[in-house]
Length: 269
Length: 269
Image 1 (cartoon, rainbow over the protein chains, first blue to last red):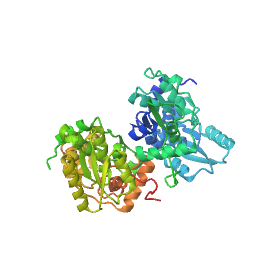
Image 2: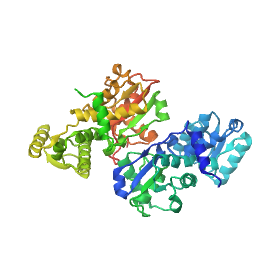
Image 3: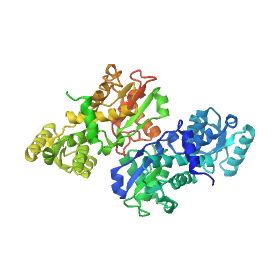
Image 4: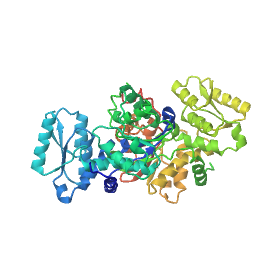
């Protein structure tokens, strides 16, 4: 992977006019609960409610005018699809989104609401990939993968960059890992920073959290910090909650990756 | 009422080491929905989850050391009681809180959790006032009223002050009104500001919002802005939601007063 801190710095410049600089919030109760100083980087308050907008936005605005004119495309039924649709709409270009025909209507509506042009396919990886390839062939659109794309990784890294600008003396950053785009970007932003030499020995540790730990820490953040975080974000908080690694007394940044939750069905009810 | 902009500026200095400077967030979907540029001043992210901490904190730190040594007292079963208890604990002095014996256990626990010394009484205004007077007499504690107190009003005004520092060219500020402390402080911060001459003709309009408008706008803010706001904060958003007054195209600050909600019982479920 060739993504560097310099790519992240350029991405930060590129997306600045389009993305939110999200706040970093602290909560005394949470600090007491986990015996550490916790700084929540609120990507749930990012556009489309997730850090995914950063990567999609960086990819869309990295294109030349000629490339951009053909649009962008991806297969995704999640936050990346919504993020790519919105970034494309901002630039005034089409976004072709391949979704499985069994995707929940709330996700279809989100993508359509941001102006994404949806093509449905059978719910198999093969169908998704072949449908995407057909669209790419027909339109000349640029494929933007949800995470396996350097422009996307650089974009995701801007969240950690901003967090470190706000709190330069963090000891540790915790980020959830799905495809790995956020964690890759975060690692590059952190290890590349002169202000942050402590990380290499620490950040590349993968920790798992129990279902109960996810739900408990999710509810705690809602109740105490008053922000809506999704279960995948609660995973990062859950690392502290379950004290899976000894971080007591340290200054810890947590990337709250998103806040897209069905408010009719909450996991503690 | 003798509270002035200067009192608010002093209050801001006084509470700075103790209170959060809360973020101001924006949301494109909300802007489209209400046809205005909305800036949410997130006092739900304030300590104890409500703007009330500002006033209580200003009152507690306005006391001389001799006054402070006797503690503070109030009768309240809500956010003011929790706020006063926390501010007193920060200064290392006692807070005597009179609560009706039928107060919900969640409220008792909140006050006790912040170290408040609770005295229960019969649930009548007369019992609350006479119990408070007895405590004041016995301890020499200073009474801090939830809103009818200049130190409290000046403290509450610091929320609008910060909002105007962040977004100086607002056309309107909307704040919910209960006892009136927040609205008074907000008006003084706004009308006293040289950057904000437009308000006097506009802000002193009282608007009511329907129950349905409160619930709909509360759920919308949770879903789209990803922050937890309580119904009294949704009242302020509801003014825009129901378009009770014509604010289209304007830049509008909304004081989100708090985020203390029972997550087991949501009004849309």
